[in-house]
Image (cartoon, rainbow, N blue to C red; front, side, top):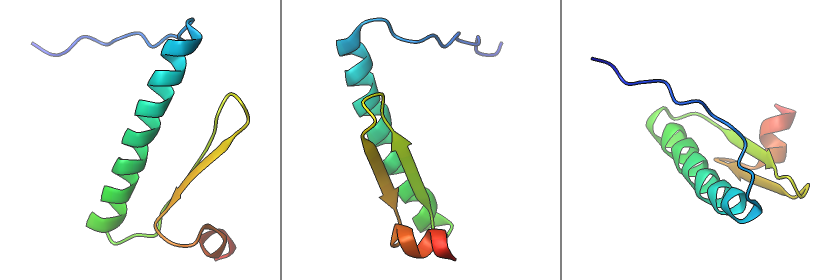
Length: 68
């Protein structure tokens, strides 16, 4: 017996959305770091939040990675 698919819907409550964003962002950056270490790859993750603030993770200098 497999898992059921969960419908993903936007969160209506601003506070819950903000808390979820912070947690998911941290998890995504952690996974990106692990991938870069385990697979020895250069990696960049860029997130633009709903407030137009930019968050980034990069295993090397982002400008260097984008210019290559």
